[in-house]
Length: 448
Image 1 (tube, rainbow, N blue to C red):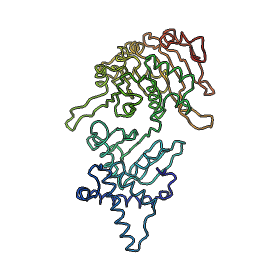
Image 2 (cartoon, rainbow, N blue to C red):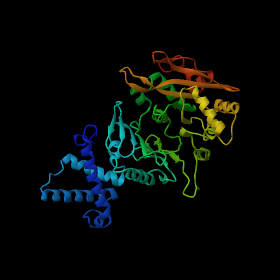
Image 3 (cartoon, one colour):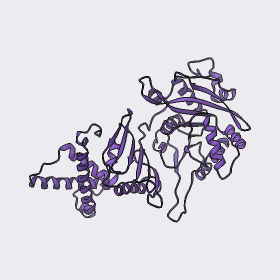
Image 4 (tube, one colour):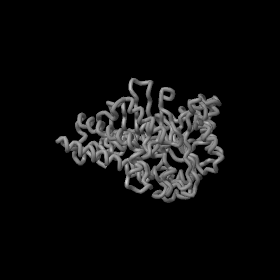
């Protein structure tokens, strides 16, 4: 795949618009003739719709090239024609011009503020304003609406009555969009470039120290309940996937998400017995909604060895903590927080807003009985001076005392930014993780 940042044919905005206009016209011709022309193709009937559409796009491009040649007009270059073909197919089956950025391995985030203004952030931190990604705001909305109808476990509407949408794209990227509440439709796409990393892989990336990775692997293997916290875009989902990679393959996993994102069920070699559940929105009559709290309760009847909640966002916190403390050991989740200690305040805020209206003291007792460790990520400066996601804190939950959760920060960042040992493990944790038997071998268990 040619990177758009490197493709010379897309450097100028005028040329980008010209190629997009040609692709849009090709798409219209294909849509107009698809049904009748597909039956006439001298191709096996086993061809999929995208393959048949590809043949039709080639025919339209050949016909247009012949017409330009007959009229004495310059023809498209090989690379230009290839990109027009790709754009046309993306408009038919993907997200149009946005699909080219989604397919670019060097792209990390795509933020669209109306059809004319889109910002692309690359893995090296570079951020660039790119040209129009649709012919109009209406076309941009249509592309998102089409994606909502085709991707995910159930159709997700995107219209005046339902002006927001979250869904997972086929490559695992997360799309979030709003309309009606902004002057122009806004689309944000978070690409997950690291979808198959284990703990060793993120150590190599600099997100995690080897000592902490060894500890976390032992914690997962011994079925400790772990919350991963951090700000937006801090790498919580990447770390959660890496932690899940340490789960033995014979265990049954149930994942619960507002919109599918983790993708553990796709890793059949690593997680052969994994069920992914996705919350469902209400239909046009306001019926049929299934929230995450209900799915967490349902997971308790699914013979799951572990329950993993992709992101705690509200009242599902109480059934999740109940699940963790009622035999679903080794469960995990992510949560937004500004520090590992701040996780407890965030949980308390969710719990008091839940239908149960759980008071602080009761919430803290539930936390103490359910959560063993909190792992916090933040953005730090790398040795090269660039921003880098990194695990900066590991906190063990010890107990609760009225309005306080008692905890020890096992690892913390010092003033230099290095992550260092700060407190010893409790005897409970040593026994549960098996550290007591490994104390004599610091190379194996330096955290004991």
